[in-house]
Image 1 (tube, rainbow, N blue to C red):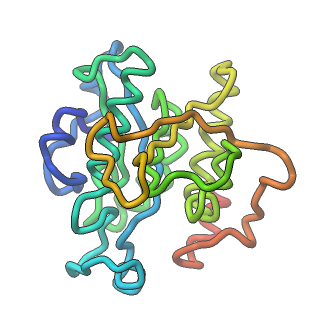
Image 2 (cartoon, helix red, strand yellow; image 1 turned 30 degrees about the horizontal axis):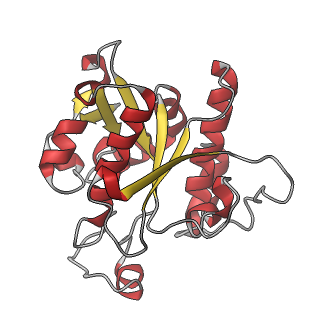
Amino acid sequence: MRVVRYSDVEKHGKLPRSSDGITIPLSEVGEDEHIVFCSHNWKRGDEDQCKSNGHVWEGAAHPDDERATKHKLLCAGMAKLAEEKGWSLDKLLLWLDFCGIDQDDEVKKWAGVQSLRGYLSVCDAVIIPYPEPPSNASRSVDVLRVYGERGWTRLEALVVYGVGILKGSPAPELWVAWAEEAGKTGGDAGGTRLERFEYSLDADHLPASETSVMKDEADRPAIKVV
């Protein structure tokens, strides 16, 4: 498992990639430090998705847009979360799929995907950088447009819920960060809202693996394995 320090994420100016060389192994993380897992939907997963969302395709899949909107929101959200939890920013680290899973070696990439439950189990919280103010008054992750509809992100939220039960937490450490105004980048903590969300087990909130939206249908059976 490889993570990156908050200060390095912030200075990087964009979401770091596995090839950028700024991650560190879990073995170098101190016992007094805190790891935050980023659960999110990619903005430019492929060329069609990129163009349909009005973004610029730069020749390869990327989780953020060309303006680094998610990077700004994620940094601001993590700063808010640290303040909420009483954590020092100097002791804060991030796990992000784009840098925590090898993006160039397909064997290592799949090994990383299969390790998601393990990665989540050692993280202290999950943050969801959400592109707009939630439109539903419910604070359950399934109501988040796109995020709540997709299989991989719902799986991550479910794992967090299960880990919380095992750790005796009264509620899952699921935190959603969004810009106070739609269309803003949320580039500073003052313009960013952060709230703790639930994972509802009510029948109306639970998805079926057969109906959840998948970017690639080949991933559907993989979700049942992971």
